[in-house]
Image 1 (cartoon, rainbow, N blue to C red):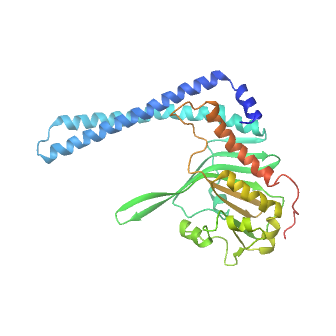
Image 2: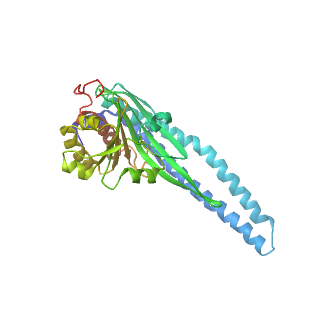
Length: 322
């Protein structure tokens, strides 16, 4: 933990932390009670089926089923507001304060998400059935205009009479302004096994255009860790400078997650599959412990590191199109 975080945590109002911790305990109890009511409802339903199968239908199993069903949905509706209040309080009192501590020019809107059309135009989206996004962060981070949010996409797969849902992406999506407008589109895939063909097979979506080609760069380490595709080879080599090719492998090793980069229009798009909800409070244990809050802090510092490590905040790029 760095000194800045220690300072941030020390300055947090401890009465607020205690109140959030109590709300977390209530939220956890609510979740447990929901499970118990759900089990009782299922048992009651099975009792009805058993009575019908032996032609001995009586009112008791049916009455128990109705009571448990009404109790389950009644408690679900009643308790949902308490869970929502806890979630909103946590995001207002913890996540929002971390974000403004990292950079006061950032705005956090947890009930808003990344615009779906902009996500689809990034060049690294997938063909999905359902899209959801929240925890939108906008503003200037280290002087660079950014937008970032959690995104969840899934595909509903139908097979005969059966359907099931497949999660395609669950993680952080970030857009940062580059000091240059691109004439083409360049994508960096995370490893040699993640080719354009695999991407199309996985997502059901064709990216870029028929002019897209694979790019081999001067760094053997970079080529072993990443695949690069672009519609403009000259521009791709201009973007992927020696410094960039040195930093990206180190960045991937430190993160140890699947990361995709896309350079399109005048933006860099970064897609990181955490397979987790980054900014949601954990009710199973102390959600406001120093260690827990540091996890959220480190996620947001990671976003800042993208800006500084790849020098997006420095005017080192010619603003004209290559």
